[in-house]
Image 1 (tube, one colour):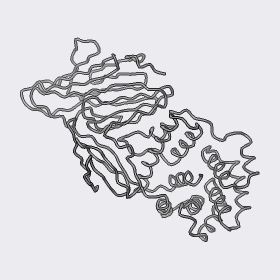
Image 2: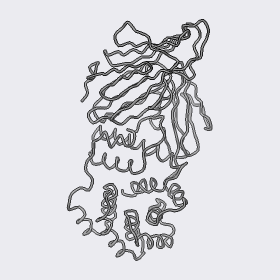
Image 3: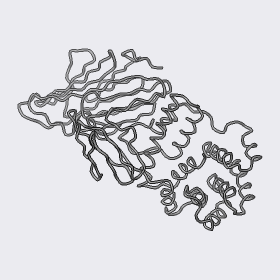
Image 4: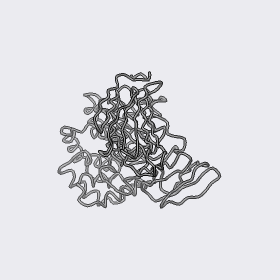
Length: 429
């Protein structure tokens, strides 16, 4: 594990006329100044200077003790107020980056095989994306003699550790449609465009339509933005997914068979299964298992043949795990399942940082939803395989958060494959 000893191993510095690159063990931070700025000498170690002639001076400082911290200061040295271009910062890593650039709140969490690293904003007002974010408000306007300052500090935690969110962030940010989001913010103002807000003794209860929304908290530090959301139930999502055009027959069969409200149209399922099992894949077999064990449709022989074919040709280990799990839960064809289990577990245990990283560690982020239903389901399976412990409970909570966020996204933008995976998780128990 990386040691949190103040320098965290080698820190490489690369400097050019407009760029400064600080390379840490966990990540690289590259500061880029617009061409209108020019580099000037600095008389201190780990300090680098730039100037905007006749207007502003800037310096970047690296502090190594007691914790690594970088700082950027910009001062208006002119005689008048000025609007000036600001440096941009690009963050890269060989690990998984989870960024949150939210004004007066900001962090970048890096998941590595041997550690979790959190970079948190101590001063400043950040916005943007990892490939180019600003540590200052944009545009940056400073009166004569005024200064702006940004600082980010690093801390190292054990591998797969989860960093607690800031105090103003509610424990659950993504909720079932119709359930109020309870916020405690007695010392902060709240902006909630498009949402219904009811003031309470300690803060607010907020309600919104299904989907993802943005709240803004205003306090003495500035304005911090936070994504929240509400999601439709799985039955509604299944209906929305079925309404999408050009669905493959196997996926159609599974969506019809897996509606949590029950199989409402046996005739449609019969037709879909007949077409699906002509050229079956894992979704068609899952639908067939469900139909064979829950309905009177005469599909048992066709499903068995399809299952043998799919098991022999399916290369997605996640889908193979779903087939085994659903067959065991449904009590479907024990002799077939016994043969499937002979080689051993179909899914190898993956490193925690990769599994949790695939769902963004369940962290707050300013990035769009990038994980899918497959990521969530396989992460839940991985957590379940690790038994009961304090760490497993934290991991499960993180994966739950990722699942709820995805559900909010799917409530606005239904994706049949993502819905299929999430339905497979709901129905396996």
